[in-house]
Every structure is written in structure tokens, then in C-alpha cells.
Length: 185
Image (tube, rainbow, N blue to C red; front, side, top):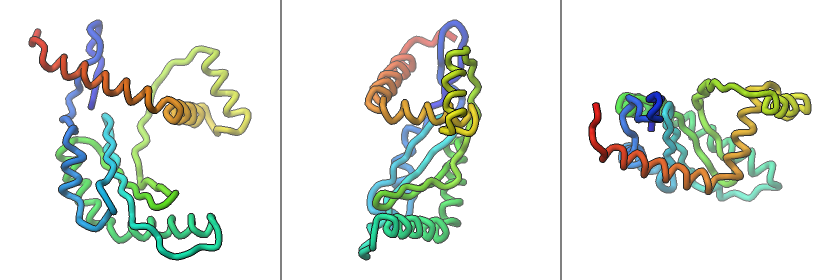
């Protein structure tokens, strides 16, 4: 859900339409047989990412590297074979939800996303935070401060997933209460 700064009062809903029903809409719109189950639909202010699981590989492989290559090849084939249909579905969803749509597929241990949006984020950091980013760059973990910040955000997301889930749930409840409150405008 989009949010924008309201001023002294805090955050408020942005002007983009709600995408609360996006998972259901995609579930009804996606062709049968594309995925083994319901696609995972993730929504933020700028983008909707749709990732589905492809049917498992049935062949035997020499090692994990060969299996990973086969999985990547299967995902590549899916991407090519479904391109026109995915573009049309994305066009409809972008009109409906006013967000870009990205796609992905997973099979076995391999997940690949196709043409996801990279949104710029502005931040002001004091020297201690900049030193953390510079250490990541100097050590070769990241090529730039921007990449180091993205790495740090991914790491926090992996290690604080349950806490972030609880926080999102609490924010949703605040949004619901705010919507039920009096109209002061």
C-alpha cells in the first residue's frame, strides 16, 4: 500500500489504488497449467511481483550443478514461452493497480525474477553508518555504497523476517483503524 508523508500528523495512504485483492486477481487471471499451485504475489508501493512454481524436474542429474543448470534452463524456457501472455496480463494489472508488474519462477532450489523494478531510495547517513557501508565496499562485499546498502537491507530482511511480518500486520491494523476514524478534512 502506498504511503506518503502527511506532515506533523505522520503517514497517510497515498493515491495509488489498493492492491489488497491482487493475489486473487492474478489467481483468476493466470492461465491454468502455468504453475503447480497459486502464485506468490508480493505488493509494495511501486511494484507487484508474481512468482510461481514450475513442475518439478523428473530426470536424474550427475550433481547439484547439473540440476541447477537444468532448473535454470526450465525457467528460461517458461520465460520465453509465456512472454506475450505475461506482457498482456501485466498491462492489465498495471492499469488496474497503477504499479509495475514483475514476474518470476521457481523450481527446486532455483528462483529467478524477470525484469524487476529497481527504485531509488534517498537517505541521509551519519558517519558511523557511512563507515559501515564503506567497510563493505572496501572489503569487496559490495561495489558501491548503494550496493552495500541493498546488501544490508537484504540481510536484515532475512534475519528479521518474523519481526517485519508482525510490524506489517500492526501497520495494517493502524491503516484499518485510520480508515474507520472520523473525516477531519
